[in-house]
Length: 155
Image (cartoon, rainbow, N blue to C red; front, side):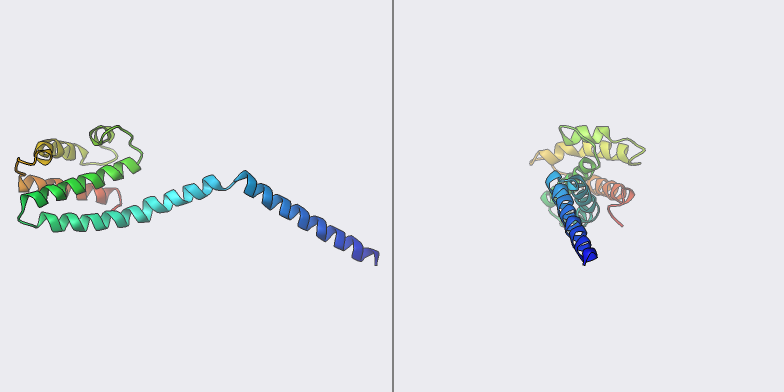
């Protein structure tokens, strides 16, 4: 009979300390940074890749249209997606141009070509009256695609 009481008391004490430990972990929010990191890892890996794939399909549709305005939209969309990728990779800057200048050749091999083509096409992209050179736009999109592949965002 004495052993039964001792076992019951030890069981109750164990349950009490177990619930106390769980409540303390919840109150301290001990795993919050681990949850946030896990979500960021999943987001950057699968959600961003899926979003980029969908946007790239739109870019390819727009670049095949005969309208110069659609070409501009395609290049701007690809440029925005590229900016989003380099921003999420940790390059901080006030503008897309600043972020583009921070990227090193060791991170993206063709970044100098992207910078040059983008600088050449930017005046015609921002001006609605100016026409866009189709071959230069296609070349910039090819370089963006090569960079996305190098970063593992595209197959």
